[in-house]
Image (cartoon, rainbow over all chains, first blue to last red; front, side, top):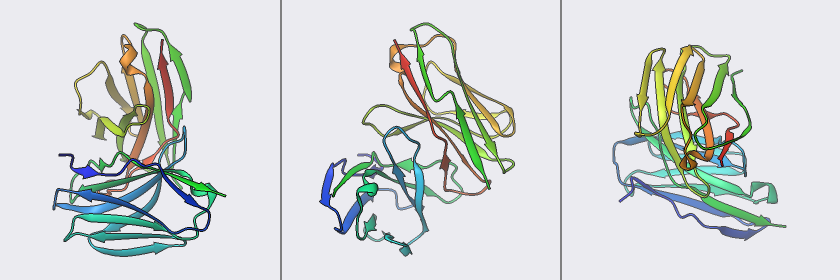
Amino acid sequence: QKEVEQDPGPLSVPEGAIVSLNCTYSNSAFQYFMWYRQYSRKGPELLMYTYSSGNKEDGRFTAQVDKSSKYISLFIRDSQPSDSATYLCAMSRTGFQKLVFGTGTRLLVSP
Amino acid sequence: SQTIHQWPATLVQPVGSPLSLECTVEGTSNPNLYWYRQAAGRGLQLLFYSIGIDQISSEVPQNLSASRPQDRQFILSSKKLLLSDSGFYLCAWTGTGGSEQYFGPGTRLTVT
């Protein structure tokens, strides 16, 4: 079993839809959670960074962490065609120098 | 602000040839540095990470090596490329004690 599981998609939605992207993990020691957006042939870009449980909002993006269920989510409101990309979740333990990544979910937002 | 550079952006090399990819970070000091490979349609594979000059850890036994000649410079090398070395190579950095990593633009390597 992988430490981090992420549905590869693709997830296809119409413009304006609310998108929910998710990851599950097995290591209860993870404390730091990140979401990256990666456009085709580009490096990943850090979107959201949260520590421990709870929600964090930044514009149209909301990151949610449920440590009791070992489940994290990224919500995108009013999705745009420019949101079409691969979204990677990542997480790490306190004091640990390395991230564990999901394999990414490809999102397609059609106009 | 901090920026991270990688070059070259693309590279086509024959099997058996050497490789040198360079990564530099500006606007910070003592960064942790990372090399990843991303094969087509697959996740990120950590190859090497470094928490300081002369402190490089290898994650996967392979045909590659890494060096850190300066605090903010990280180099990925190979003496003889294999077909399986093809992929998208990404460099990343994080501040001391930080968890979030920031990625460079990547180098797309095709071994023919």
